[in-house]
Length: 173
Length: 173
Length: 173
Figure 1 (tube, rainbow over the protein chains, first blue to last red):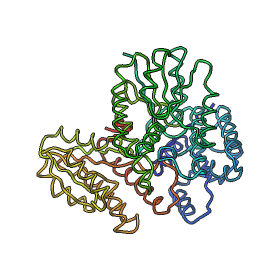
Figure 2: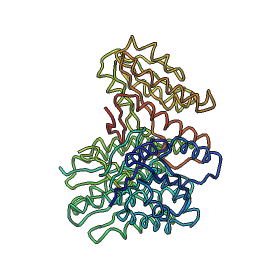
Figure 3: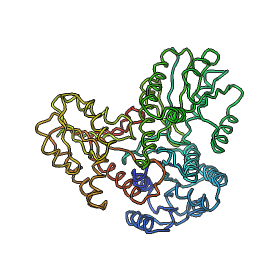
Figure 4: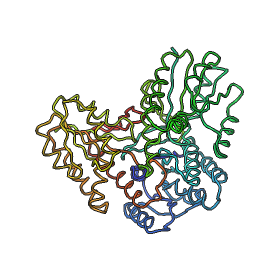
């Protein structure tokens, strides 16, 4: 059984940097599973910047929704897999499904995968529930979903970190 | 003197679950002081879900504003009292009073109650000040009030926890 | 070389109070570099309240944008300098420059100043990236800038604290 590491924190808190550093400790090649869709200029620019930062050790796999298959399909050929990020995956699934209940079932299925993996898995997520309650009902529903998903995944992970101002705090493991 | 435990964190970060687990450690019966008003479908559904999760050890006391009286009136007949949550109580008081100053005086009065209680008290609150500054003046005022109230109550509590992704971090006690 | 201390946290989480306590440990006189502009009634009231709380040990220096010069110009005449806060400084610079890139260069220049200072420096900042992603593009850009600035400054600081409900958690030092 290989370790699963869950990293959460606010926007631009250094989560991806820590995740990449931890993955590089496992050697090469490494698999980077990108869940963001290059739907607008802002996201396209962010994806290109992240890709440029990563070196030749990395192979990029773009998978916005079917994370379990992307993990299963690449675990044999990589020293470690990094998913960046859980929050965009949840967003894509919620838009596809239109309701939180089936999305949470996919989160549970992902959590059940952890102990069966032969390759270390590092997941990057986001804390989105520490601001004022949003006016918008959809934003509130997403915030609740993201909180519940983080709780399920952190419970199943072997190590958990939360980032503040680029500094990690170990919560588990 | 019985212990007072203050639990804070983001939305759906596992605060209520931890609070319920800690309360169950004191035996039964337990008092659950619910401060939420079942004013809309979303809140009604949330209250019903929380109540269904709690078992027969719990007695529910609904009290949206007069927390001190609800605590005083039930401490003798319960092994522990749980208040869920401080943030909704502050919302109800702010709507009733229209101004933060008298609400903060009620928070101070509650904090002064802690060392006089004969029954363990567990308070669930929310971190709402770690997002972007809200445009809306009322939301800003509430965010400031919630931050000051959390500081007053955490200072008076014997144990304090903050939750991230369902995992507690002990800040005090 | 004198210590640089970086304190972050949510709104009204006790950051300024901790910063003032730490500064008072260095003796008197102390320099308080205020970056807020008294542009509206809310900010004017907040500045006056903070100033009233501080005692005669403090000299107030108002500097909304040129932080490096304010620090350099006052380090010789104070036992410690406190900057309150980094987030308002970033806001002022972003409004002045209209773009995040030159602001981040000023943040880097400030971070490079730390090891050259002869006086302890305490910086207060804010966590603004743990709420839901803002709709507004400018708010999103500011949130990213604030996250990156916090990471740069925390990396260069000797001690780093994050505050929750008035309680500090040491992340570094």
